[in-house]
Amino acid sequence: GESVGLHLPTLSVQEGDNSIINCAYSNSASDYFIWYKQESGKGPQFIIDIRSNMDKRQGQRVTVLLNKTVKHLSLQIAATQPGDSAVYFCAENTGGFKTIFGAGTRLFVKA
Amino acid sequence: DAGITQSPRHKVTETGTPVTLRCHQTENHRYMYWYRQDPGHGLRLIHYSYGVKDTDKGEVSDGYSVSRSKTEDFLLTLESATSSQTSVYFCAISPSAGELGDGYTFGSGTRLTVV
Image 1: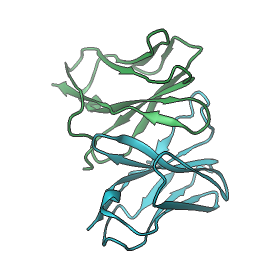
Image 2: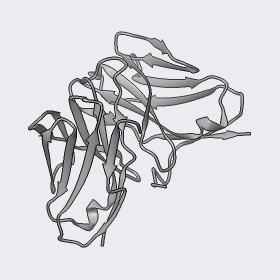
Image 3: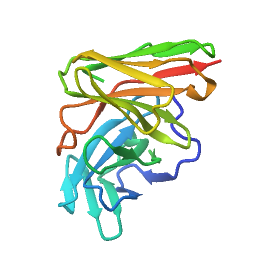
Image 4: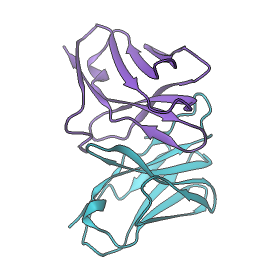
């Protein structure tokens, strides 16, 4: 499959545990944040998003937390499964079409 | 990747030749984007479109042009391919520009090798 990154930060978790993937964003003017998942050989897949006027948003087995004070975003995955193994990207948007993607974090789930 | 198709999936071309990549959507989304993905650089925006015949440059647009003559098709052209344009190219679509819940839908990508 396509090479996503050679030296990505890596998180390894046991199946069934909760995963927390962190992201520091750069622009204090960013008002919209998104998490994507990319499996080997595939395009990124939208997971969940949050706006700057929110601190927390929940989806199915996923929660995104936003801390604007320290410009930090996190993705929590509950009861991590082998199918969650992938590279996870955070992205920030300052309005309009300028969405900036982070370098990504590789998640390994051990059975 | 329901609703969005990229072609070709793989292409090898020679330096100096023009190359066109195609993105086709069946979602009737207004916004379309071309990104390239390279190790160490993540995803970078090349060009985007906010409607038929309405396009604009992204952060790495040099050496690329785009066209959108109808809602469903967004073409990316490398005018004269160079080795630095060897990459994986992704097309993405979205129904809005930054509305909650309207994250991008990406295609499966085109792996382009310029020799």
